[in-house]
Amino acid sequence: MSLRSRLNAPEQNNVQQEESHLVGVYRVKLLEEIDLAEMSSLATTERRARLERVLGHIISREGPVMSTHERSLLIRRVVDEVLGLGVLEPLLEDASITEIMVNGPDHVYIERSGRVEQVPVRFASNEQLMQTIERIVSTVNRRVDESNPMVDARLPSGERVNVIIPPLSLTGAILTIRRFPRSYSLQEMIGLGSLDEQMLLLLASMVRAKFNIIVSGATGSGKTTLLNALSGLIPDGERIVTIEDSAELRLQQSHVITLESRPPNVEGKGQITIRDLVRNSLRMRPDRIIVGEVRGGETLDMLQAMSTGHDGSLATVHANSAEDALMRMQTLASMSEVEIPFEALHDQINSAIDCIVQLTRFGDGSRKITEMAFLDSHGRADYKIASMSGYAVQPMDQDRIVRGKFEHFPLPRRVADRLYMASEPIPPAFGVAQYDDQLATREAK
Image (cartoon, rainbow, N blue to C red; front, side, top):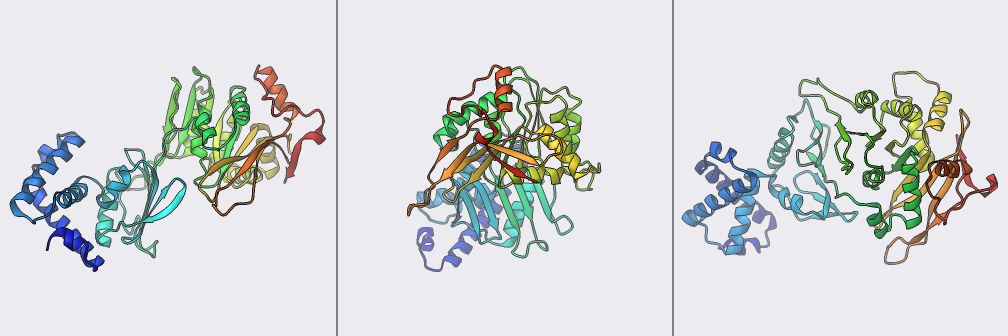
């Protein structure tokens, strides 16, 4: 029976086992015939071409009989096993996939265009999945085993990888690979419906006028994408320091210093945290500091930097609303070993943060700026938030597409005065509030 006939057989599990058996057999034969020392000296593309050529000779010499298409598929799978990540290689080569989620050997999901779907890909066994995981973590000099069952790392190619295995995971080894989409400009984001032209004009004015801006949103809402786009508005020539867990930002300015935290090594030593990098950046004479995400005690250092001469800094935080963002930053800042009363943290946040940009990911996969808010409070008073823009969502139709419109509100006088002093224009859709009752304000404790 030919390979094509076997692939069409109803016993799908048997077919997959037979496929995996063929891949395993020819992987061993291929490794027996190649010179590993010679292969290591070749470039990646040359290495793949050489392996495909050698394997083609082996199949021609020893069988089995198969069509050209079946032969190409077998060669591809065997070489993927030898060089890459096996069954995950085709997914990694698909540029439209932003996340790969492996829940044990039998369930593989992907995210494409903001939607999660299961794909007909599976590993032959738990052992094959663990071999793939070990190959991934070994490239970043890490290991995963029962004594170290969690790994969070960035691959040399830029993808962020998270691994958790039994006994912590009760459903088998879990592998999550997050691929970072290409950088989008704010104009492109307008085309995607994430904001409108008037919001872009206001954001551009605030960035150039050195407002301290916090980008807030849930996981996958596009915080890093927006942060990267906003950073493109910073005038060239300023000294910018970026600080991230995994280097995702792609700034185009000429004077950029990129810092990345470092996890502990296999002995548990050598860790460099975001907080360490924020503190060190203050000694590097930055004009602006950009923190990919604040999630701990470094929040206090970031707030102090924003309050002491590093205007125009940017950061992201996980939160579901502008109010939540302020509460979360207050909580994160309190995680510092420096004991500061919550009232004093109020003072820090009120003096440091100017604007909060809230992102929301909707059920249809779209991502939109649902609020741009100015922090219009002083000292230790309760937070006073003035909305400058919002997104009014319409009821969803049967097509399940989210529709709505962006709204614009009068700017607080403090915003208008700062833009005027920086010679930055105020977009006509906003205007300036002459009285407090013209503001779309609310308070948060």
